[in-house]
Length: 134
Image (cartoon, rainbow, N blue to C red; front, side):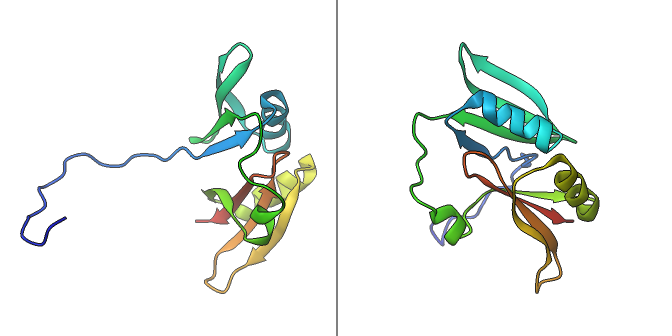
């Protein structure tokens, strides 16, 4: 924005963000999110489905089918490339639930130097989802 232009008052407010995760197998992803992480299917679109959404407690994660993952090798793991960052009210309870459900843990529950407690789950397509204390 040029320095001589005054920003106008904005009435619109941002109300949500829906991260989009890529998957090569929509059925496998939906099974993972519902059985391992306790999400519900919000919707599936297409026959066969190529787009969908899983939801839990007002959090929405969009799923997009791709024929091949856009990331190669293990760059997501080595560079800690998160697909989603989700804030939760009780991270310890969710961590225990995810462990009991057999979710693929990429990082165990950890206290970070900035006093956030978090853990990272890896889905079957390699998407890293971080769950953190709020």
